[in-house]
Image (tube, rainbow, N blue to C red; front, top):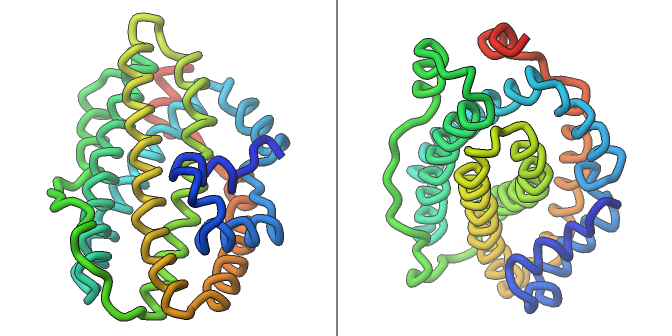
Amino acid sequence: MLVDVGDLTCRHLGGSAMCDSYGQALRSAFLASPPIYATTGFADHYRKRARDRSWFASLLVSDCDLEGYSAGQLARYASEVGDERFACGLIAHAADEARHSRIFASLLVGVFPQLEDTALREKLAGMAPRLKSRGYGSTVGFGAVDEGLLSSAILINLHEVKALVLEHLLRPLALAHAPEANRGKIGRQLQVLIEDEVQHIRYSAEYIRHAAASGWDAAITEMMAEYQALMNEVTEQEIETGACDPLVADALS
C-alpha cells in the first residue's frame, strides 16, 4: 500500500479516533477491502497519466464539474433530512463543494495560464452554485438514529476519505505542472481542499459514533465493509476512464 488510509484519516482527525468506534470500523473495512486508490499501482498509473497536460487539465475540469454537481445534490438532500445537526453538516458540506468547484476552476488557469479563455471561463462558472453555510451545527445534539441517514453518513465518509487521499496525490502533480510564480497560491488552494475534506470526514464520523453509542456497532461494521467493497469496484472503473475535454485539449496540444 502507498499509505495506510485508516492511519492517515485518524491522524487528521486526532489520535483518539484511531481507537474509537468509528476508527475501529474504518480499519476493519479497509482490512477486508484494502482501498485501491491507496495502492502503489494506482498512484503510479495516476502519475503516468498526469504527465499528459491535456489529461491533467481535463481532470481539473471534471473535478470542477463534479464538485458543483455534488454541491447541488447535498443541498437538496439537506432539505429532506429531519436531523437538524446532520442537516447543518450537509448544508456546510454543500457550500464547501461549491467553493471547491470554483477553486478547481482557478487551479486550472493557475496551473495552465494559457487556458485563460472566455468560453472556458463561462463553462466553469456555470458549474458552481452559490450556497451559504450556517456552520456544522456542533452545538446541536443529534436525534434518534435513522438507518437511512446512517447509511448516507457512511457513504459520505468513505467518499471523503478517498477524496483526502486523492488530494494528497494531486498536490505535487499540480505544482509540478504550474509556473513557479503561481505555485504559492496553488499550494494554498490545495491545502484548503485537504482541510475541507477532513472536516467532511469529521462531521460524518460524528454521526457514525453517535449511532455506535446507540447500539448500532454491528450494523456500522457491516455497512462500512459493504460500501468500501463497492467503492473499490467504482475505483477500478474510474481507472479506465478519463477522456480529454476538447476545450483544454486543443489549447494544450
